[in-house]
Amino acid sequence: MISIEKLYQLYLNFPDVCTDTRKITKDCFFVALKGGNFDGNSFANQALNNGAALALVDDPSVCADHRFILVEDALKALQDLASFHRRKLNIPVIAIVGSNGKTTSKELISSVLSQAKNILFTPGNFNNHIGLPLTLLMLKDSHQLAVIEMGANHVNENALLCEIALPDFGLVTNNGKDHLEGFGSIEGVIQSNKELYDFLKANNGTAFVNIQDSKLMEMSLGIENRITYSGNHKDKSTTADYSCYAKTLQPKIIFNLDGFDIESNLSGDYNFDNIMAAVAIGLHFGLSEEEIKAGVEAYKPSNLRSQLIDKTENKIFLDAYNANPSSMELSIRNFIQMDGPNKLLILGDMFEMGKYEAEEHQSISDYCKNISGIEVWLVGKAFYKTNSIFRKFEQTSDVIEELKLHPISSRFVFLKGSRGMKLESLIDFIK
Image (cartoon, rainbow, N blue to C red; front, side, top):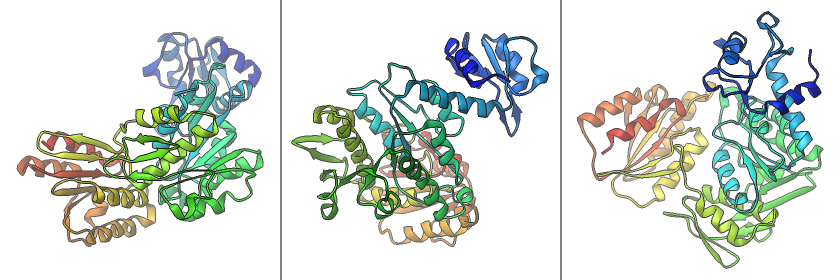
């Protein structure tokens, strides 16, 4: 088997790493990964024929010539290679974990830091045990910082990702009821998020911690290099290392940073937490107030997250990239506070709830009972089973049929659900 040093030399010669034969580029380094329904080894020869220079495989039977690089486990080799590369370059890494707001925080932090530094940040949703090493292998010696999002759905997964990325700095956005099926309970979620703090504590790293979140403050105890931030809470923000007060939270968050009024493209107090993380990190790395203002104001919500869409007859607040009970309740609360006529909540099922599925969907339905003056539609098999006073649809296609038969007008519509519900498909049927 090839040593990591020799594998690294091959990578340096062919640094464009690819795991998908549909995306092969000339002289790329193909890595044959296995999945539930596929074995990348069987596509290695095709990858080479399509232009790949080398193929990293873990099945000796496919090795036909010197272009096939045999290892014991291709995924482990990919992860080891990424970690080896990260050590070689020794560029500071900021890791982001948490239940809600990881991607928004990553995008905000990256937008701010990129005003003054050459940074690498996680593209799209490359945040798991495969995407993270692929991201690290994009690091160049010209980069000054890396902002790495880490996504987990089981205990010990963030610990593994930390061993690969070796973060110097870390941010936990919050603890919420995400991936309960994999984590088992909210305690499992907390344990998983704490794995980043544990790594930082053991390796003399630095944690950025929201001082308003008592649980995060408790979890991060013992980290010598702990930097706190706060937004919009006068009772605690005076003790934070970095703090700002919001002038408004709706329809946009506007706040003042040392005399600079900053107008974001986000709304709601939970998004102010994400913004303040970016502000704190920007200030820590020496950015000016002008640069931070430019970075925050340049960020525009996209990819189905907190997007405002003006249609001809209606307005839509689209937040349907994903959902869990915590993010659902926060988003609903924010939407209630937004200005708009004749509001309609369309809520889709929350996936990966495991044994908590019925309880959590019923809880959201009950929460909505206390909202006055807003119509609610519940969509999906789990919501359909709830004891509810609201209109219920078993699947998203049923809502499409309803909108076709009875078009809505002059409504402000909120769309929120897990990725698999594909609530964004309703947009074309809301005029």
